[in-house]
Amino acid sequence: MFDRKKHWGNVYQEKSPSDVSWYQKEPKLSLELIRCTQVASNEAIIDVGGGASVLVDHLCKECFTNLAVLDISENAIASAKKRLGDSAKSIEWFESDITQFDAPQKFSLWHDRALFHFLTDPSDRKSYVKALKNALRPEGHLIIATFAIGGPEKCSGLEIVQYDSEKMIAELGDNFELVEERNEVHITPANKEQKFIFFRFLKVPKNRYT
Image (tube, rainbow, N blue to C red):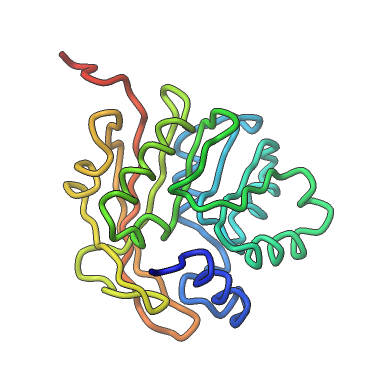
C-alpha cells in the first residue's frame, strides 16, 4: 500500500526545496489572486500542501498576520521554519495528511497549489473537500491550482489528475461559486514547461439561487 507520508518525507530529504519541480522563486499568480480576494491582513489564511513554498514569506512581507501552513512532510516544514527564522514562530504549522485534517479554527482563505491533483482516489478527494468545507468560513475564499488539461500526467513519480473548470466544479460541489480562472505555464528548475490552471472560488450557501 502506498505510504503518502513516507513518499513526501523522502522527497524533501533527498532534494533541496529549490530543486523540486514545483518550486517558484516568487509565487506571483498566487499572490495576485490572494490580493484579489481583498481579505484583511488579520484574517486567517492557510496554505495547504505548502511544503517549503515561499508563499508564506511573501505574505509575511505584505503584513498578513494570521497565517498557517499545512504539509504532510515533517522535513518540508522543518526546512520552511529554518528559512523563516524568528518569523516562523508567528505562523501556525500543521503536519498532517490533508485527507485527515480537522481544522481547529475557521479560515477566510484556503490556498492550494499542486496538492489536490495528487489525489487520484475519489475517496481521498471527498475527504479533502470535507476538510475544506469544515475549515473555510461562510463567504470564505478558495484558491486552488492544479495541472491543466494537456499538462503533465505525472509528478514526483506519481500519477496526477488534470483539471479544467468543469471537472473542478464537479469535485467541489454546489457550496462553491467559481469567480475566475487563470492559466499559467510554470518553468521548473530543470527548465521544463508545466501547464497549470488556477481557480478562485467563493464559498456560498447550498442552493443559494433556488
